[in-house]
Image (cartoon, rainbow, N blue to C red; front, side, top):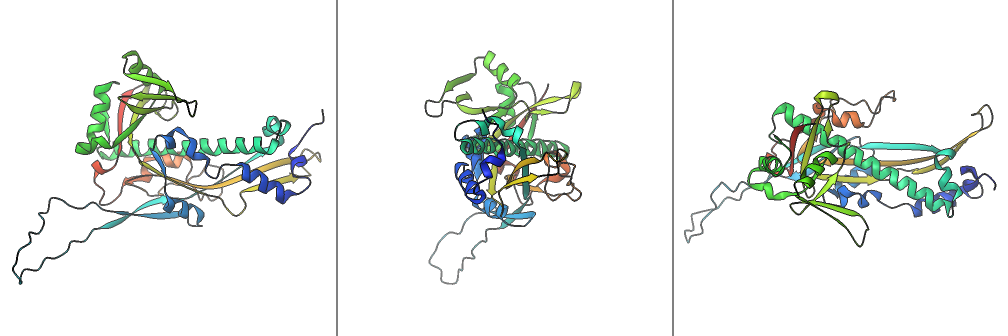
Length: 338
């Protein structure tokens, strides 16, 4: 059987191959992730527009709440009485665009290239890569705002044992808006604790064939990487209680989203092939500003433009936006020892 390479796929008509490969890829692969399907992560057209721009630091407008503690006007028949309309304040959440790319060599995609319909298989592999990247950025952001809330005593964190009482304490940090919570994110060991107490339900969705986990009727995303803070004996597990739209998401393709490259001199003249995939992405929590006080990227850039996972986890980069009331932010955490 002849050995198939990336070069074979792009040899005849490179432009057409790009178009076919791009057509196989999902326009927005993140929409099939558990975070998106639960409603915790939602598409935001303003974020998508910002992701398509060349602006690194972005500002996202939002309406401030109406103060219902002020008594309204009472109508009468006195001509001299003039009602004065109230204004509704607005604000801006600060975020940061991420200009992402990754290259895959022939050997990284060898199984896809050798199979039937190789372009469709490569597209599926790239889609999965971008899904995981979006989830990792959301996970890093969750860690960052947890640590920032804890450090600045913002009122998002409850401490206690894993169980119903613990997650009730966490959700009640939202005061009378606790009903906005739409799901949980937790470590598998914590989900096991709930399961052993017969507080969980697991069923397979007939349409998607995916397992769905619930506690108190709310969906649960089990993610071991997301919900551990620290390492070793000081590590802590954290349960996140999140509402619908707790995180906004926007994505855009840059001018050259796909690119095949062959470097003849590599391998001492044997050559090396790489398929590059690129995407701009913003994942941002409602109610928080990303201050960009510390931007290191992934540690390899000479001048980083994008926030890396470490930057998103760094609490110095997060603060509650001005004018935002804590209980209006549908995010809460339960911290317990690991």
